[in-house]
Image 1: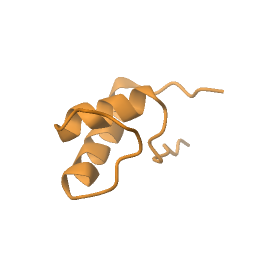
Image 2 (image 1 turned 30 degrees about the horizontal axis):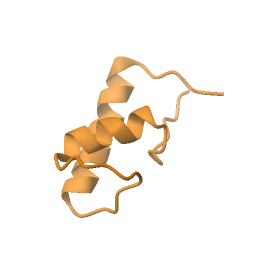
Image 3 (image 1 turned 90 degrees about the vertical axis):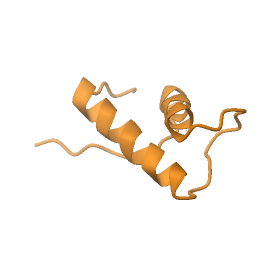
Image 4 (image 1 turned 180 degrees about the horizontal axis):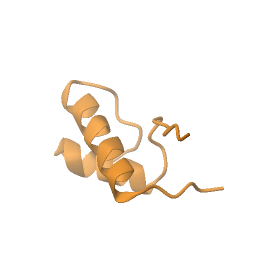
Length: 56
């Protein structure tokens, strides 16, 4: 079941992942892109980012 995120959660997840990539974290997909934000967006679209959102 795919979880739906608010736009704020989505921005936070993608931003955090882009920061990880820019600091040298390994990529989770094969891509020809070099911009960390574009890579993070592509990873998010493929649903492979290992970040979860805890809600009350």
